[in-house]
Length: 201
Image 1: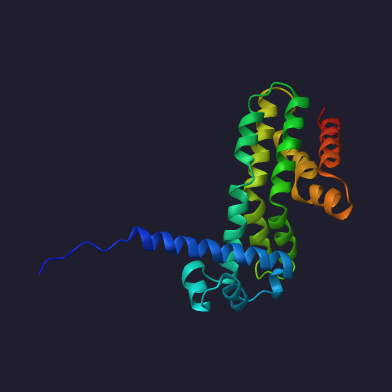
Image 2 (image 1 turned 135 degrees about the vertical axis):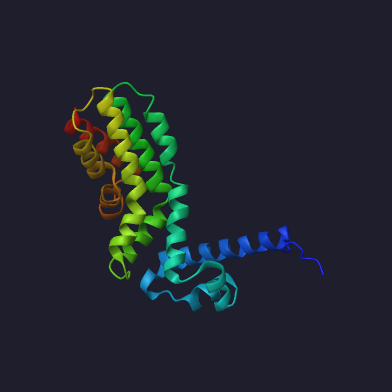
């Protein structure tokens, strides 16, 4: 009797990936519409058209699915491209103009995910961990931009500059101006760029 290699079906793997994708997308819609706290795994299964056990075996718990929703939003936010563009700049106004535009596009395109984050924070079983996961890469990118500005001699303190950049271009700033106060994305982008330049320049 010979030992064979484990059977691998590309078609089955593709179907599994598609099922997981459908579950995550269904969950994102439910989280955004109903709020994280009011959504159950049963709701997600029903919306995705699968059995409840399939949700657990394919995507995990509700918290795991939330992490995947946010991870996908982070991947699609454009932060890496914005960082690469800013690293080519030589002056502060250009860098901050690009940063304002890049973070605007990220927040605008991933507005649903940002809504989910803020809706989940008060009820999540580990809110601090959720916030760190949702914002960690964002803040790290701003830190790298601050280091670039320091290395170019445009600012003195990278750590302080990172804090200033988060204040003007972080999730709260865009949400406050656009969602809470009804500003257009264009108005918010232009104003935040000017204020950040005044604070740093």
